[in-house]
Length: 295
Image (tube, rainbow, N blue to C red; front, top):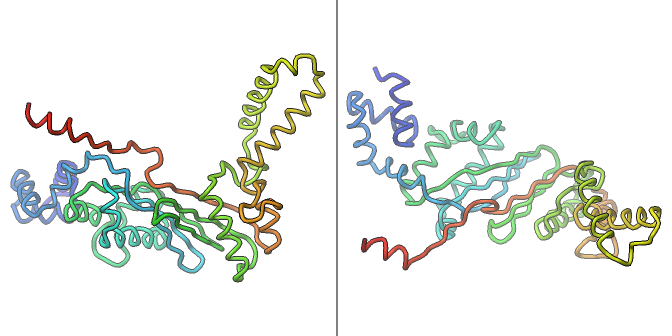
């Protein structure tokens, strides 16, 4: 009888899935070293060596099923793998799993059994690492319920998912998608000026006041004039950083909120993923690599 603690130890030592570890221990009568060899022979433990590599490429994808939408980011080491059909299908499977199971976080997602299979998402990921030959990582996801519209830009470089109120007929759906495209292009910090945290506004005001005082032309201006200048610049800050207050890129005579309102739509939430944002990028230095091999 193979104990759960032994399976857990083998999993920690190899990074392989629970079922693979259990099978390896069963095949080797519980011998840990032989089980590791068994996994290596099967090409599964190879994933351990790859796990340290930087994975900052990959795909952002969105799946909408009825009134539920999921956006996921799965990373790989190279853009070449992101174009692999097997990798792309795995990304879609991850999004499908998010829709079906509503996991609390990435760890819960990885440990959940795939709705259309016998393995967990973690085991599927380990298998893909072994067969495709690159480190991969399920980085993050968002899940919305309601009137969900998604937009994926640049073949999976940027994804935006929005949640809308109102009847999403053809015109409403197009309007929500237009807003998603603007989010992809301009990356606003906030949905609306009313949701900007007070501390962010105060921080911006402090910056504006410091800038005003730096200008000698403002040295003798009274406080009420300074206050009006600050108010005007704060409004400009909202117009630049809040989606609803931004000029609509397809018709800058109106704001995004006015455009959406004209189509009977109001956005209540959005999420934007950009592939690899905030991750360390892999830098290839061929000369250094060759030099290291000669030492």
